[in-house]
Image (tube, rainbow, N blue to C red; front, side, top):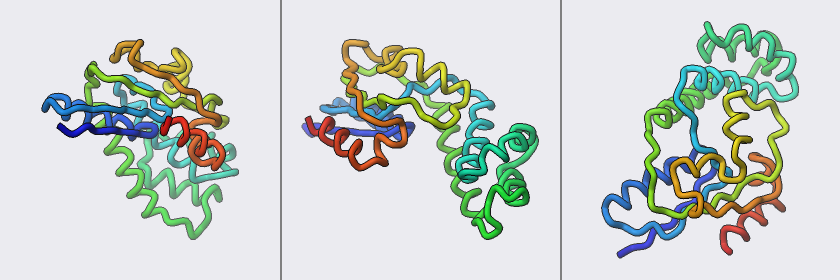
Length: 196
């Protein structure tokens, strides 16, 4: 019988968990499950898709994100992602030659994944999870619906609601959610921790 190991970063780890669910239901063995800074997803809501659109556009605005935030907050509810990106370009928050079409396609894929994630009912599995969590908070603005879930129960990040708390092994890694993998030194610590 094959033993399978998984590691997943951020919301991508939910895919690993779903695959583990399928394998376990077929009497396969999941020998190692590593989550890299993975919060248990919250309840589905239309607000989370609006937050996704807002953050998606703001992430593309770089240093001009704060100037555009007020416009975006006002327009997110009634505008499509194409219109939001076009307005960002018109206000100068995005360069005139910015590839809006590519961004729209990328957002549509992210939104489809978000909808799939919202429809997935996370089961309790008889599995151990190694949660490699960021020891520093994100410096950028975090939507209110993400703040409470993240801060409520570090370092398990909510997974003790579906998995036995004793089966969650929490390992701090230097950096925040982004720099724990983008910073070479932090990434080396993370790789060593996973290998161990």
